[in-house]
Amino acid sequence: AYEKALELEPTDAKAHYNSGVIHQQKGEYTQAIESFTKALKCDPRLAKAHNNLGAIYLTIGKRNQAITSFYQALKYAPEFAEAWNNLGTAYALTGEYKKAIVFFKEALNISPHYIDARNNLTLATEKTKQ
Image (cartoon, rainbow, N blue to C red; front, side):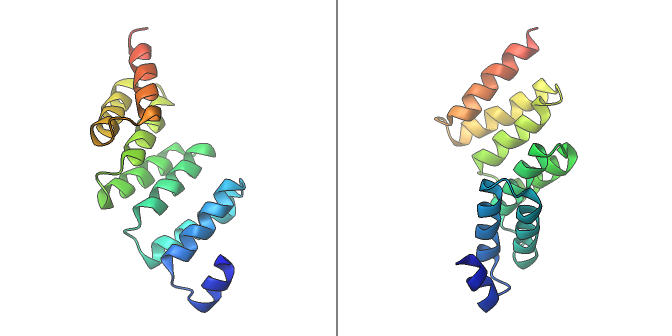
């Protein structure tokens, strides 16, 4: 369905984004990166595409690119709790727990019932006490 939409309207950022989500869910990261990149060429302010791109980069071990993508998502959507949580996760994965805590807290300020951010904050706080 998204392929057909893209044939009819190749500059449709949302169609590229949706295609990227499908590829991401299937673990087809190269194709997902390509789709999200095309979505962002159509609409650079599409925060969800930046965030998903960052999540893929984090999954495949490209931490610096992931962090850049999460910051881009937050540039266009500062109230995007998931992007704050993902940014914290990127820092926690390299042991930068104090920095990660700041981002997890920001995610919780925006969305107080965000379970992943709460769990990540707890884990990062425990790590700073070790």
